[in-house]
Image (cartoon, rainbow over all chains, first blue to last red; front, side, top):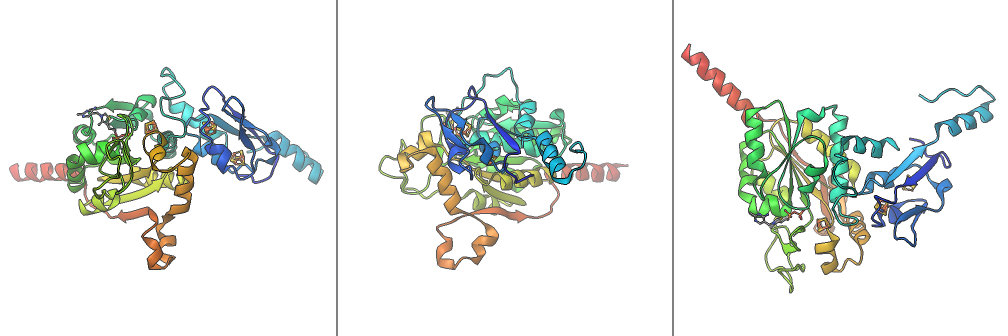
Length: 88
Length: 277
Ligand SMILES: Cc1ncc(C[n+]2csc(CCOP(=O)(O)OP(=O)(O)O)c2C)c(N)n1
Ligand code: SF4
Ligand code: SF4
Ligand code: SF4
């Protein structure tokens, strides 16, 4: 599990979200808030540290945190000046 | 992390109506996720697993998952499960019950299933209340707390499920809260790997019927309460004794080996057959 910022994208499925606020209250990086429609929404996606809390605790399976393997590859590529390897 | 949610979707019955019927923030949904992850982690196929549920909001879990499922009668889930396990010991039998289901109406079945050591995992979703029927007090409603049937506070002492299971002879007894979900995953996985009767208590908040009446403004406050008050056994042991009582211990309380009832039955049968020949 990577702890690096900006390597994830957080998705919320509003149809399944009931706006309980658990994810909002416990996200260590304040990535989320409850919107005017009473559903969770992403406000600071770049701050996500991929801790997984929201995904493990959403009682309605309404959150998905996707890692961006490609982006990570490019980051490695730029850093090391090597050809990016596909993520295993 | 995305695999977590995707995995759960793989085990849901998508022909049922979603989002599920449970209230916003109800911890039962977290238990559902934990159970699915645990079963997946053990590599069990859907057909090898039987979920036997009682009646209550907790029992709804069985409706939404694509295993073999039996939605039984209130308080009697363990009796159905006992029959299933004795008839087909190869199945992984998991019994999902609420605290009211398992310990009030079904209390008798509970202690005897533990005593007999029948090979099922009993997963009790303890929200300290009868959720589904409107918030009547259950045998785990804490003393002095308010419920629909105890508007001036519960006079009776409540059951401690872990202590009760220990006293009834269970060989595996564990507890977690839904906030400590990785621990919950871990204790369910261990329970499912073991023979005999395994008790897993999941503390899960019901704000609708319990929290609201007991000074929790939101369901999130109930999760914060778990964070503040639930403590793993090893950390608890380090606290000065005077501070321990106020905390809720979580972790594995008992883990012992013993032959399960269905194993003993096989052993008995072969002994008698040998004697007959
Ligand atoms: C024999 C019988 N008695 C009573 C009921 C009504 N009833 C349905 S669910 C329930 C209590 C549910 O509480 P609990 O088991 O704690 O589960 P929760 O809803 O809190 O998850 C009761 C009393 C019933 N269905 N059958
Ligand atoms: S935890 Fe899930 S249901 Fe609750 S607000 Fe967040 S996304 Fe919505
Ligand atoms: S994975 Fe962790 S940091 Fe990222 S949004 Fe979820 S809770 Fe916040
Ligand atoms: S009444 Fe309580 S137990 Fe039932 S779904 Fe609502 S929060 Fe959950």
